[in-house]
Length: 246
Image (tube, rainbow, N blue to C red; front, top):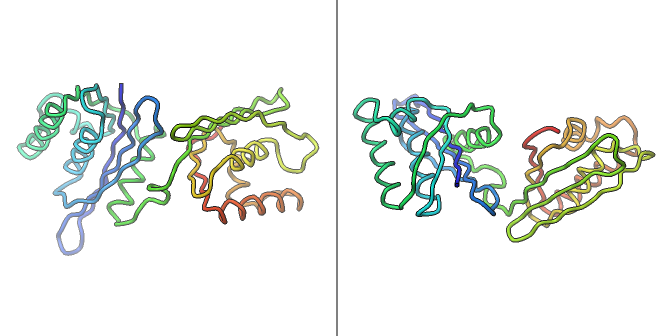
């Protein structure tokens, strides 16, 4: 089963014209999440939302089932039950015709915007509407999962990129001035390739705060270690995005 999380952004400009943006995160088995976005002229937000659904259908593997998740009830009613005005009905028909032509078995369901991939789709849509490219969208990506248990003297860092999986068991030094959770994050960054975007899950609030602002570290040695790591990552074009807090 393939999944897509979609969202849209819409705004009426001072001259009376309307501009919209759509964003989607596509999940297919065995692959990293795909992130897509686009700008369009749209009469309202619902039209932009339906365009995101249409793009999900176009980008999903043909001949397979696809579940599309949205927080827009009007879109669900239009695609699933044929409800809504003439304009919505026409756009929904385009979505259904596209799914039929590609052999995609389509289902549209509701999820709240607070879901991780929905937040990402929302950010993509907003950036597209503003005419901004989302940083790192076209760069190579790696999914990173940090697993750390307080009772264990090590953390497990799993990195997944296209065609490769890497697992590291990271010893945590209790005498280090760098907090253990930040030690695990630095190990994850050390696994990155030049120019890669790390999509990090389950980094602790402490690790995230110290990576974003190393000066928050209380001890000079910890600050120096974090600053050096950030400078090395930036010099290699490595970006770190936090998708959840552990």
